[in-house]
Image 1: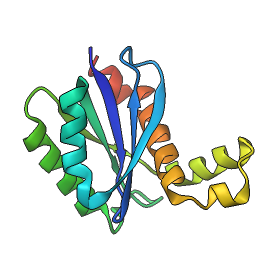
Image 2: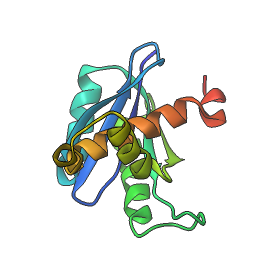
Image 3: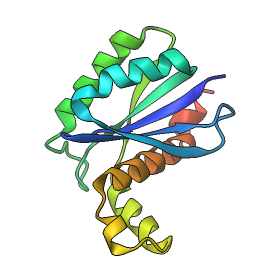
Length: 143
């Protein structure tokens, strides 16, 4: 069984999280410049066994697509092609992950200057996305 990777897509930076090999714990991995993302994911998947890549589906609170929805969907399609049949690429609702990331940073006692580091927010958002996915019915149907 391989890891699950979650991608919190952003136009400039993208947060990445992965599960442990047993798919129990989600952990923030990296924040990558978005223009380097596909190559970075391909290299990572060449080193580690990844079975599922979850791309955050950016939607508004009312469920309508956000401004970055088309780009995230395009990323998911491209990753599906370059990673091949051995890796399932899915989109999963990422509503409120950034809000929850900021709340987690505050609750965790991070100082204000640390909370301004958007790369940290992106990694935490990806971790929340991954944890939500692993707890979802969608994932339960994939096991």
